[in-house]
Amino acid sequence: MKNQKVVARIVAGLLAVLMFSGIFLQLFSTTAFAAQGSATIDDMTYTNNATVTNLTSGRTVNVTMSFIDRRDTINHPLQNCKGEEKVINNKSDIKLGSGFRVATNTTMKVAVTDFVSNASEGYSIAYVMVYLSNVIYNGPPKTLYIKDTVVQFPSAPDPYTINVSAAIPDVYFGKSNDSGDTDDDDNETFTPDIVIESVFARDKNGAIIREVTKDTAPFSLDIVYTDRGFGPEHIDEFTDDTLFAYITDAGEFIPQGSNRGTLKRIVSADGDPPRFRVTFENLKYGGSSANYAKLDFRVQYLVYGENISGTGSARLYSIKPEGDDSDDETAPPTPYIIISQYDLGSEQIEAGSTFTLSMQFSNTSSTLPLENIMMVVNPVSTEQQQSYLSIASATNTYYYDSLPAGGTLSQSVDILVKASATVGSQAVSVDFKYEYLVDKKRESGTTNTIIYVPITQIDRFTVDPITDYSQYMQLGEEGYVTVSFVNRGKSTTYNVSGYLLDSEGNQGQTEHFGNLEAGANGSLDFTIIPQTVGEYQGTIVIQYEDENGEEKEIPLTFTAFVEEPWYPGPVDPGMEDPGMMEPQEPSTLWWKYLLFVVGGLAIAVPIALYLAKRVMAKGREEMDEDF
Image (tube, rainbow, N blue to C red; front, top):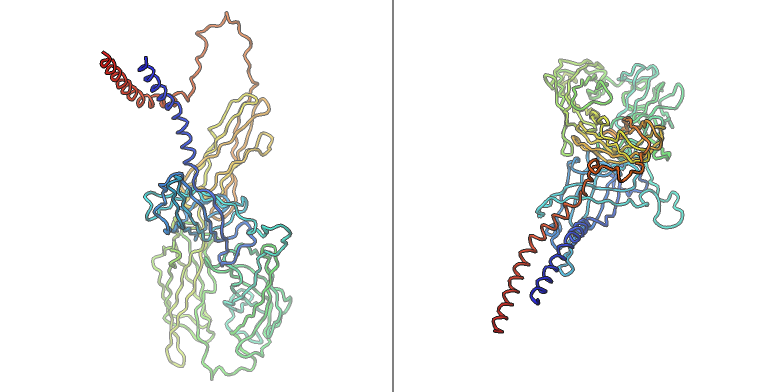
């Protein structure tokens, strides 16, 4: 009896271990998931390194984030990576949530700054810093979310995946973290810094006037300048209806009407400050200046709701003052070839297409003809940006015998945009080499012009027709609708979301998906609860932003049928046919517990038998000794 009790106790103990094994496994899985927490935003600056104080939708910033990755084990995946860092340049590998989105020049650097391991307590901690450059804030929510971004550190055995989020402190929105009123103390200030690029006089047809005299008919003054008081992140803030310009000192110019001019933003190279063209029309030249005529002007912008004004001074050198007969004594000005006009055929060029660059170029000299002219057209690549353009014409080199003084020539070049081109501006360089005669002496000259081509990607985000949904429901019953979509384009689709409209057009459930990479697919699930019997007509509206930041919507409708709920009446037990009753399906969870039981028995039974045999054998030995 004593041996039997011992065996029973052993078996009972093993069964108890078996019963709690499932609970321990579930607790382990929950604990192991608690990693990558405590994320904070440590710093946020604009691309010119100025501290962010007025973060609004569309602004480009740099962000420094830190987080702690704690594991309840001493074997941390980053235990050998202290001091190591990894830079991600491919924007498709950087996955951000709806608060921010990547730009064409976004980069991400991840560094392991410290590592702590506590063997006695059984945990380890990695301290990680993330540096994001040139990311675009999309507006609410006020959160930076990095999801499913894979980093391979040199000393890490496996790729490391980042999934963290951090709230953006209010101080970056112009709000103080302290109590009290802040008003405008944190507002960003702007100081225009106008740098003149070119000044031309043009006739009523827009042609450049090579020499302006007192007798020249009224003309317009065309001034192109860069405002270096602003950064590239401000380019999209300027619109034509918020730009103004007027003359403050006409100098030797005589306005024939209003001092008011027109101011428009023009294309800038990627990463450069905004550029503008200001035009003052209906001017005359007084005719008394020497060397040049000067005009002072003032411009006004509306930037983030604030009126900003700046001043500039333009000088026109192509003038002939009254009584100036020194042409025979002074060498003529150096002639140049300029591209006076060009046309791309469209405001935006789609990736994967071929377009025609039509150029009109002119000799700036009014006295010297040009000879032996060579023009070379080439796409421009830099260390920061590769070129997605290639010459589709038979050649990129063109020759011209001569170009008369003040004359103009035209040339068209076919250019192919690669299908993989990113959204933004691509540069084309046009170089001229030429010769001319001064006092029977042959001179040579060169000029270079950069033309910027705005590239856009074709929007190929598509939503499948609704087929997966509850077509028949009872009143009060919960149904579902699943909407699937795919990005067939070559660029990311941003901020994919959707909302449900019921039969009466009332907006209900809203679901957010986030960004959808090129070639990826996804889906959104919605819950419907009908309130009336009959036909239920619903609409799912899918919203997203394309690579150009344009917001778009795709509505899809579906029809379901709602019936009155059915409740079975009382049934006479004597009349019930047991054979007609449908068997109830067993719980889908029983097999999980069966696996735990079978696995436990596979370990417990051999141990129990072994211990039982030892106990029984020892019992027989004691009995033999008694005899």
